[in-house]
Image 1 (tube, rainbow, N blue to C red):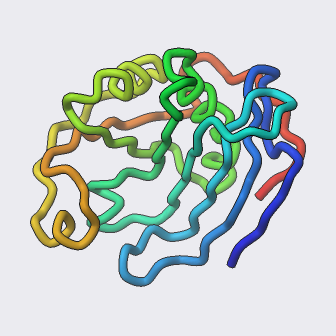
Image 2: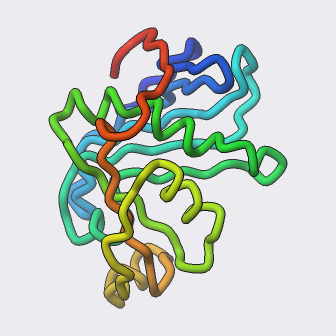
Length: 163
């Protein structure tokens, strides 16, 4: 299922998240429900990155995490991924999740700093099973961070619509 929207689902006055699609549960990866948002600068249309929320539980979620984000190179260093994570905290709460996993490569210092700034706890560093690596081109080793979105400083978000 695809839903395309143009008005922000969430904003903090610095960035907007525009929901671009909802996915039905993927049987193979077992990601559960998925939401994807474009990250844009506030009141601008140009995409500067994306954030994805996967609500399932599976071996793939164990390695990929519940949250995936990407910020395009010209926009890195402004904490946009951290802001985007905080903005989707209400969606996480609506789905009854108290904790979510964010994974990143051990050598991805900016992503690790994002997790630390969110207040995530490094659970462990894992070796990704070969069958997952072969199927989905994922790194061999991942840091697993646990985030409790309801703890820490609340995001200053303004919700316009809900997924």
